[in-house]
Length: 200
Image (cartoon, rainbow, N blue to C red; front, side, top):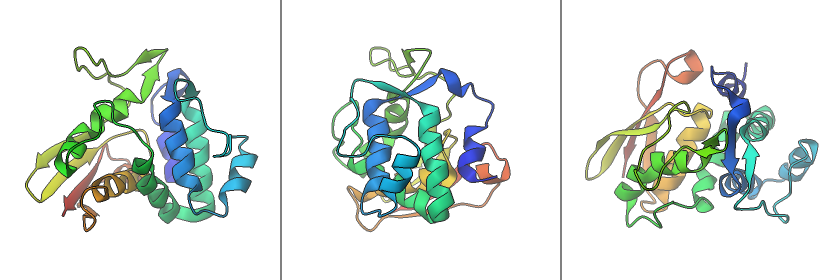
């Protein structure tokens, strides 16, 4: 089973989950950037092409995003998933505005993840209380230093895609950042989370 398919079959009611139009567009645009295979795959999946933008205020079934990521992995492998993830931060918006530096961006990542998802029509982040809804995992920053950070990632998305998100987000502020997976049983192997070390 592919990593994208494995992510999509975790014990979560995917039918109740949706992405914001901004988040879905970020996935499609990130996948489409400098990718000659993109038009054919998007047409096969009956997804809108980049020249027909998604409605930012709309919401889209998360299952469509999983279908796209499974197609990316099928055509381009794990490297394609990581590349797609790394390009998403170019298009994604932070609910609190643009972060000042890499440390602020990493600290806002989990909030942004929940902000861009909703279940049964209810957002998974409350901007008034700051409370995050459960059930879709986390991008948990468990250690944040001056030049490094550690993350435990348990999101619904494939491991390589998430690693790409961490890389692309960090490189918006620190071009020489590296992201390595630390030892342990990652989600591809049935673990609860993937563990990443970032250095810049």
